[in-house]
Image (cartoon, rainbow, N blue to C red; front, top):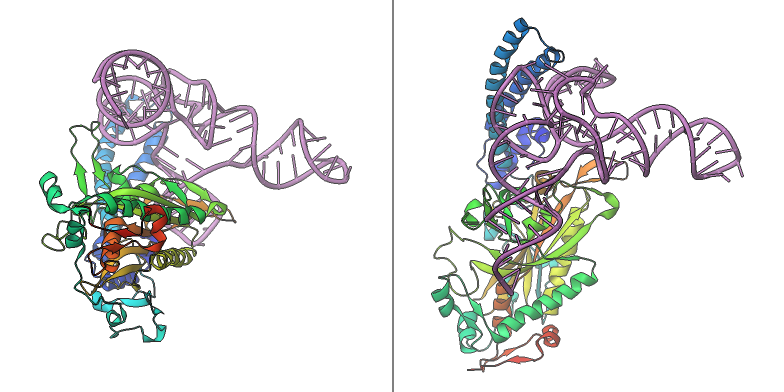
Length: 441
RNA sequence: GGAGAGGUCGCAUAGUGGUCUAGUGCGAAGGUCUUGAAAACCUUUGUGGGCGCAAGCUCACCGCGAGUUCGAAUCUCGCCCUCUCCGCCA
């Protein structure tokens, strides 16, 4: 969340930014609750101070009577204090992050700014051509035969089964078999090796976490309906656990409450986890195949940086995204997301990586690269001591890395051949042990 | 699932209702001494919030949350975590 003092001192800037981002929370409501809270703090502390003085020594019976009365008064005030604090904090936590000056204003697809467009044959598109009104899809490669989508292809090759998953689990699940499963492992190997070489720390993390963790990364309160709650029956008493939709919450929460040293920054790490998403609100949309499922696997890259270093980190993560796509020889673009479609409240600036699908003739989102500035760090209370001994909040940057299911879609559609086989991308062959996926019925 | 032990300032430990404004040791920072260092000695040493231009004043924090009390690290209840043992188990 934002620095409470910043909001008090710059209500106009914050209001403008909420509007820019299409938020609904009212700054005035917050300021009012905050003022009430601070007034109550003053009253409560005055009472506590006088009590502390009176109780320092054993009071006489007459004083006791007075003090008993005072206690009741204090209790009432303290109740009001708690309530006002919760109200103010709840409102504050719903205010979106301030936005990068680079973030374009807009509502959706037409308003994102293209940063790079690449295809395997012609490489980068001239930067000067990018911009509003340019249709980069026309630059992307097409097939000269009827293209099957990943669901048909997966069925023909007997490597993706969404019929049996419908029986076992319902809609929005999939079985990956044989070469599809091997492809996923190969993708993991390719990026994992690169990240280890780049000095990222490999992590295996809990995928069931407490509310506090999801609040910390600002997936709560606003994104709560996207998250699965675990029933309490087989869980420790009074524990409400949630299935994560991303490894970002448990990864960042690993450093929750800690003060790091500036010389330990940046910290780069990655995790490979299942991700669970309810997808309420998108019922009926993208229901086919692997595109939007309740459970998928992800290799995610995250980083903690010193202040003023997160933008650099974001570019670095983007360079890894692009390295991966170029290793795989997949056509893609990188876009800068616009103000009313830039992920969640924590976003300071967001890039999306989109792969090209020659069958659908459209781009598919393959990942988000988000600079959250100090927004998550403040909630998670992750700080560092700078070289002057000043305590500061770190900046957090997170990047999807590889969303396995969707990357499979991109590979299957781009690498299919007219005869129904799929060529294995060269970079994955060492891990696949073959160069072609053929039907194995 | 059952039984027991424990959780106090960076670390280690003391503290079982009011000089606890949490003591002591270690560590760390500064200083004295020294050619330099070590040792010794002296001083300092947490986090967060509110008020204030500031100096400063004040509140909260002893795993977490409730409660008892004029007053809680200390008493009561609930919970969490760690360790040991039994049971079950990949």
